[in-house]
Image (cartoon, rainbow over all chains, first blue to last red; front, side, top):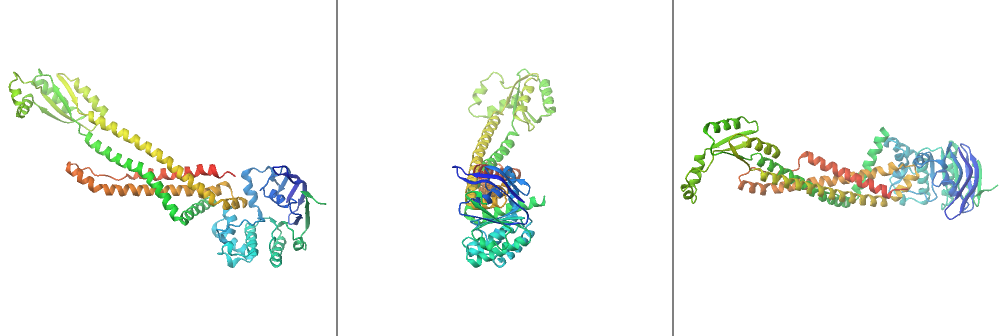
Length: 217
Length: 298
């Protein structure tokens, strides 16, 4: 499903965030990406969604080399992925419903179908009653669940989450982990970068540890 | 095809929503564009009216045709026959040389001078009213008439028609220049409006890109924004011109009644109004296009 082949990423200024990374993830796997701060976890996730481009090597997502993907092809790659960002990237001038409907409106889903799917996604994360609420009125845990609803509303085959439980208390973090478990059970391929390994260890298929931009043995 | 239509409808609705949430900005923007467009549109309206006036006046120019002094009765009758048969001539009136003399004698002060003359200095003359024809055709008619036998001189009173024509052409050029300048102003205003829109939506643009939005998805609502703002400006301009016409109607009628004319001010013809509105839409779109090219490179 996802394959990294000798991937390096050097940022301007000479800092090498990733060095010769190689690994493969099969469909339906649940990968925990761990490692110290600055080990390159976020950069690795960004390479999958073509938010960053590798300096060397090939990043294959669903048979397509993202490293060589043209600019016009990037949106269509991203529509196949569910992305949960470290800083969530919610739109604070839109309510819960409008935030979640955005990926569907981008993909050109007819408004009636879109509304149905938004409500299904909100139901999954327990925010169905809050669809008219503005994000600023949500708690940290609810904001994170809103970000998850937006990532899964398009029913992506691959879900990528960057520190989904950061800044959450244990109960909230546990709820989030349970949600990911349910996505895993229906066959979604998951890659989760996290410091809270223990939350996901019970159902992960594999751990990938980064150490200073290299895959640790 | 259906998805494409939905996306356009969504983009247009999005643009309308955005115009609606800042009603004051929208109103002021439309007023600026409207007033800028009202100047050339009003100029065009006045020009169209003057053109009508000029056409009406120029439709009845007169041609005076003077015979030689030695022209006999038969020859004069022969010329008259030819004039009456000419396809470009509407009416002919004959002024006999004796009649001309009598008319002048009736004029006080000149009568003594006329009395002292040995013989009648006036030739037989015709006053010819041509059918409505262009100034060039009028000139050709003059040449043709001057070549008739025993015709001494043909005089056109079309010089002022030419002057009016030149004046109208000059005014038309001025209106065109004005329209071009204010068209550029409209593009510049839209350019800036769209730039501000891009700045206020930067978070939305970033998030949309991350969620797989194409460039056209991001640009589409802004194109609509520019075009709708332009359309609103065009409508304001139209309203201004129509209102101005109504306000001027009564005073102009008073004035023309004094001159015994039935001239009345007409508002912008429908076709010109449509040109105005489409130009406003196209210029708004163009401003948006330039702004997006400049400010929305990723």
